[in-house]
Amino acid sequence: MTKTIVLIHGAWLNSRSWEKVKARYEARGYTVIAPDWPFDDRAPQALRDSPDPRLARLSQNNIIAHYEAIIRALPDQPILIGHSLGGVFVQHLLAKGLGAAGVAFNPAPTPGVALGLHAIVSALPVFGDFFSWRKAKVMSRSFFARRFAQTLPQDQLEAAYDRYIVPTPGRVYWNGVVKPLKIDWAGQDRAPLLLIGGGKDLIADASMTKAIWRKQSRASSPTDLRIFEDRSHWTLMDKGWEEVADAALDWAEGQTGKLAQLRAA
Image (cartoon, rainbow, N blue to C red; front, side, top):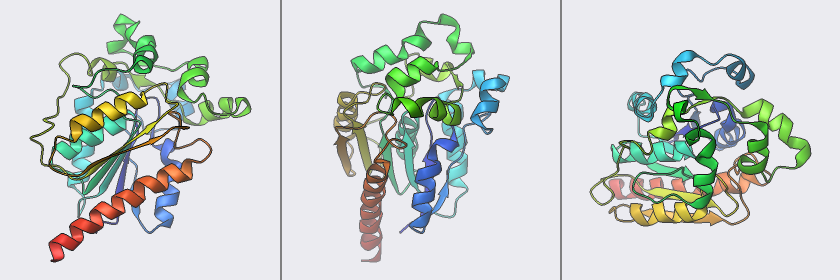
């Protein structure tokens, strides 16, 4: 059974967003790797003040290739855990035969699945700027407070934004609608996958998570779904994040344990 986890962050965040989850999983005896996207490997304030010009040209293909190289260099197949767009990348990496198990938290729009209303509204700041495909965009503080982390207490919003929010390439949004990377739902030979959604998510609707689960369930490998009705998109840093993080790793341990038993039989 693997004792390695790779954490994959989504848009508007970098690896700092995993700091609490990483420490919790390490306390359970895991080696936890939380790589940044290319050109995202500085403190959020520094990235907001002076983003690397190359960030604007970063595509979903570039990011997936970045993580694929990291995973292939590991001595064994890790558990893959991603949030938001990172949850989409987990699905693509699993489809490539990587990972011992995968968990996608609040997965962003995945090709072949209809967009939810909240996802459409939340994408307007990017798609409303036609030239965003060649820009690194910065989330506004009001958007963060109203839609991204709306369940945070008002007195915590400013500090959370300052600590975690980074610019993101508009190109990764456009990649989802212009010649998107597709998944062969039934034909893929992948590791088990758990999809976790939030009933209060205003970025990636829970209905969309359920639709992804129905598509992924065409695969022959185990595909499970869990919806936390009181959770927002900020689920892994909001109050009660420990329950959500533990649910993901408990499930992954159960799946990798079963595979280990089958191989030993």
